[in-house]
Image 1 (cartoon, rainbow, N blue to C red):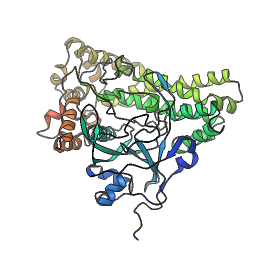
Image 2 (spheres, helix red, strand yellow):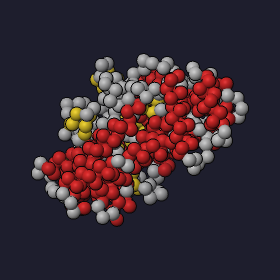
Image 3 (spheres, rainbow, N blue to C red):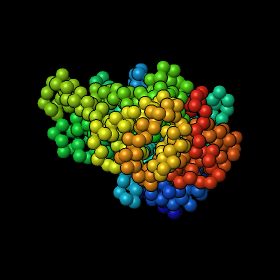
Image 4 (cartoon, one colour):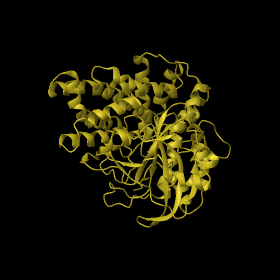
Amino acid sequence: MTAHPLSGRLTHRFADVLPELSVPWQAEEAPAPRLLALDEGLAVELGLDPAWLRTDDGVAFLLGRSLPEEARPVAQGYAGHQFGGYSPRLGDGRALLVGELTTPDGRVVDLHLKGSGRTPWSRGGDGLAAVGPMLREHLVATAMHALGVPTTRSLAVVATGRDVRREVPLPGAVLVRVASSHLRVGSFQYAAAAVAADQAPADLLTRLVDLAIERHHPDAAADPVPALALLRAVTAVQADLVARWMALGFVHGVLNTDNVTISGETIDYGPCAFVDGFDTRAVFSSIDEGGRYAFGAQPSVTTWNLSRFAETLLPLVAEGAGVDEEAAVGLCVEALEGFAPAYGDAFSAHLARRLGLPDGLAPDVLNPLVEELLGLLQGSRVDLTTFFRDLATAARGDAEPARGRFLDLAAFDAWRERWSALGPDPDAMERVNPVYVPRNHLLQDALDAATAGDLEPFETMLALVGDPFVARPGREAYAEAGPDEGFVTFCGT
């Protein structure tokens, strides 16, 4: 009997260390599986053979149905604040953690299925996913990785041959997600609540903190108060992550605490979008009627989410620091206060790179330049992606393409003069400013076509956003902004 290609490589440390946060489970069978998308480069990074993944056995593995004997797939439990309201029992309602895989370069990553069927956390749902939302996550995750944003990634999307019931029947699919881990703020909320209610051993939260430190922030282990060091580390990586989103014009759309990772990776590409016209009030999600997760609200709501994380850590911070809970609150508040300056510094640095400016500019030079530009972009609802490419052209002497995007020409001219005096590097700008991002209207057209069986528009767009800094002749439509208003995204559940 031939050994499974992943024999000895797929471990189950999460399930072993935190059995209270998982339930052993199996993926449902797919009646007629068909591979729709495979990231061959990612497969090689993981030490997997793309050719094997395209075989019947490989596709069965991607669906969680042909695993090594030692595999122990589980559905993970977590809680979360969803649009500000606390849900004590969320969990993987349509997902499975297949296991942890060590890559050839020594990294440990999760292999995770989305849309693999009902679990004990499904809360009445069918546990399935449709082709369109799964291809959407595959493409946007690919784009974000290519743009240098920390992100979960999609190894593959497999059509199941089963329809799922939504407003209308839709073809079903499973996405194979790769992540540094799936530990999230909601994991800590679930564990803390279980311990507080005497429904879990008292050391559960400690084990969760230790695993998070081991997987993502090992320096925190040497701190006198590891839980507090973990809070500082997660605050720092989330500040940088959100700064990258804001610099690119990315709107996550559903920043619930269960979608805030301990690793600092972007997770869950549901109702996300890139702004076509710069507007801090931009909301795309059909379920965000109050604008809680609007583009400009992302830094503040992330701070709120991190505060919920801090609340779960209070007992361990108090114990580790040898103080009462009130003093522990003060220590956590001090850690959380690091978010604003870390975010501000990261955002200015990312904008400076987009502007082609040298490192080390004094804040009193850089920050006013950035703030004035943001005001001009907001006032004229300028598309960020095309603007920064045009600005590289301006650095070479032709300012008209960029200038023509503004209503207040005099104000832009004055700003451009100050920017030009700092010596922007147009070549450096073109290395960091993409030609292509997933344009909302084009992506939706591609997903509609894929749902109807035509993958060509999706594959064309995937190739462009996967290598976004090089302009291709004949693909100009993919570089231009779409309609500035009225586009709505859906979570796909």
